[in-house]
Amino acid sequence: MKTSELKKLLKKNGIEFIAHGSNHDIYRSPITNKTFTVPRHAKEIKTGTLNSILKQAGIKKGGN
Image (tube, one colour):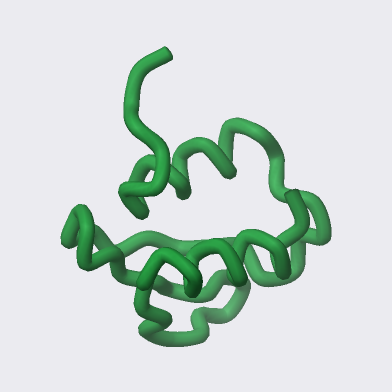
């Protein structure tokens, strides 16, 4: 998934943008009450990283 697509998905699900870091953007999920980072300069986000972000955001359930 592209970074731009992920950011649109996060916004659609009510995830709040907090700040720009040097290489990552920082978001907070009201669903899980967790703060997490999203790489800013990667065009394609690797599958493992994407799954981790979606779980922290509360968009994807944990487990297999």
